[in-house]
Image 1 (tube, rainbow, N blue to C red):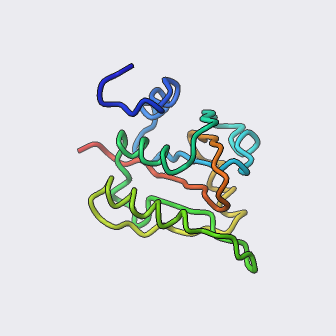
Image 2: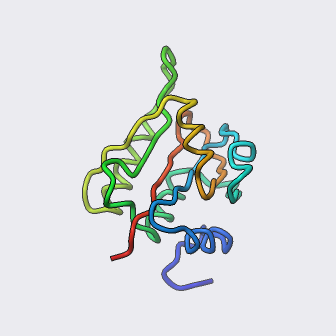
Length: 144
């Protein structure tokens, strides 16, 4: 156990976050996301039993978002005609505001565009999140 680090963060994720450099991306994936196939060229960290909001909050307590891009956060947009509940995005907005001290608008990518971006990620965190469209891509910034 370490002081000041959220206890849900496993050692492997601490290592991954340390290894990531400015501009690297990490996916926090919901339980329906194909984490292993999309992340076959990345580090896949399993955090079963946890949801995206608590992991998002824990990760953002350790890394800054990229301050040099307009939208360092990407969400998977709903498929046209799908009326799935995306109220979890409001939770993300609150977490991002608390972590960054300001509001951040997230980019919304079409499902397959999101998969393409996720395939470029340094790491994918697989969760047990049951909300649909709960996937998030974060672009790491610089510690100033």
